[in-house]
Image 1: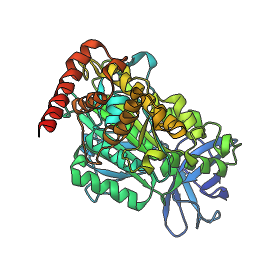
Image 2: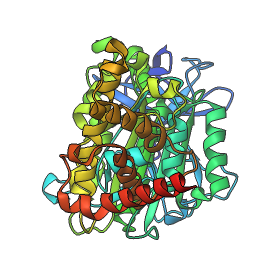
Image 3: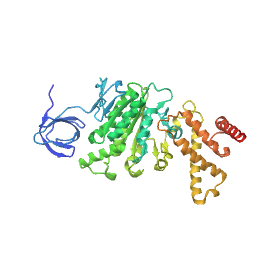
Image 4: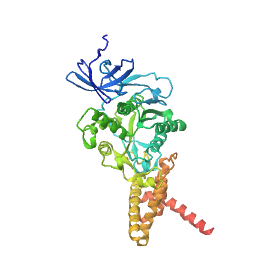
Length: 473
């Protein structure tokens, strides 16, 4: 077997990039080993090849590299992740190396981090409800197994707490024995990384979780590989070990910033707001790795989290993400200012596959009707409150006053819940019916009479009896 050639033909350095000339038999995305005169070794990856030259990105940066004395050899392989079911309960960095102090895993296989494309014909339609324990998601915008549903947040919002809560609580209703979470954090601070690791350890969620953590001071190229490592681990658990895997990626904005940084270093023609023109394609290569395959029992469900710069939904990152994914969960700064956690704004939020995961045999027969009625009642309640600000409460009809009261109760009891409060879908549906008791029954036009008789009337009787007992006392 021939040893790889070593080159001393480095001609140029620019930030984390290195140009190597007079190369032979080098491939795109190939890994490289760089050896400095001091004996220090660094790792690189081929980004581009043209006219006998290779553009190499150095993982650890090019600081301290002397073009005259540094050697580079190409390893003839792409970045691969060693995978095994023993990854569950372990913490890795953005290179796929364990950072939890335990022994390296014994791999069953080495998988290309770019994954294998799913044949569209072999895809199965998402159809099974995933319970997150958060009412605004489970009740109003349900997550379905095999779906990709992003959370749009803003700086200073509690998206990290929500990510940790979903990772702790998420489950399929059929049982959790085959359920796993792959959690990838990109460009987060040491404080945020400590929060996630301690929270998962303390609550026992780490046992069913594979964590990949890329810190803010880690190289940008690692930020690019972190979500791909996570998705490779998820594909192995889902399609080789028949597990239902929820992949949580946070924060995709940091990933896109790293992509822009690398693009600028390569002197590429920038697109919208300086992001590369291939941002849409690059995001799609990750988002499209979610789904179900015919003949396979496992599935990959994605919950990417991104912070919208200046809370701007038209920013390229949330804008392009919305085109690829199947809806969005939006966090509202107005609710956050009111001290409501989680500050999920249900009105602009949307789960495009929600109808596929709810109903009889999945959640409950009344779920769809109740969800539509809650949307309608909350919308009318917000309109009534806006009208009251302009005209005064005296100008409101009795029905409008009831809906305004409902809107306040909805935010205070349905939207608001504890960070460690895990509501079952039954509890969420019961809470929805309880809130509707403040609205006149004749105004409930989105639910069938049979459901009103079955679920609402018993609650109205209980309230009536409680009122009588209070009056007698």
